[in-house]
Image (tube, rainbow, N blue to C red; front, side, top):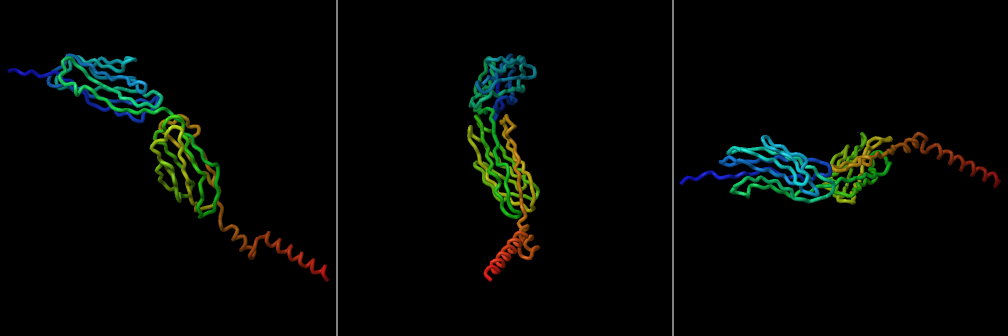
Length: 284
């Protein structure tokens, strides 16, 4: 008995595209494979996944490829040889909004005996654009070599989930982090503090409390900024904080130079002495 090879087209690749947001594109590559028998024709389809994803472009060597607005990307293959591997590249564009969809790509050929290897699908979450706003006080003051409370820092998110927000606080030379706490964030760094957040939910906020220490006195400026992968408004992402650090020894040094008191103290003592003498004369 003669057993003829069968027709079989298979598909491999990945549709992993989590974290895309409105306007972004991702290219996904797939491999169309044939078995021991040549295929007269085969059709590859990368379907749109409304309302989140549209196929923007599709290419494959030796195939007639096109994009149809209502369907997606299509590549028509002809005369595929046995044991062949053909690469197909598909460009997806994310539409604005927070969506969860299940895009599908598939390959088909007449007489295919095994449909189990013809389809790839995945659960994909796309994000809309948002506006993460930075809020922080304008100034703070303290004493050299003592702990100083930095103005409270707030990250306020807009109407869509914020993707991987990061806060950065660049401290001046001679100033370092003593302690930090961040709601739902992980912070690290000494002279430059970085706080990373997984996500910020729509209309939520995160608060960062920071204590620093200065080894020198003077007036300084600290740069504070926030970033997020899908933040589209950089105008409110940065701020400056003025830090005034005084020298704890100034008052003591002035006192020592004056023999135990400053100029004002000596003037006050002189006035009191004059007042006592005046009253003593009046009594006599």
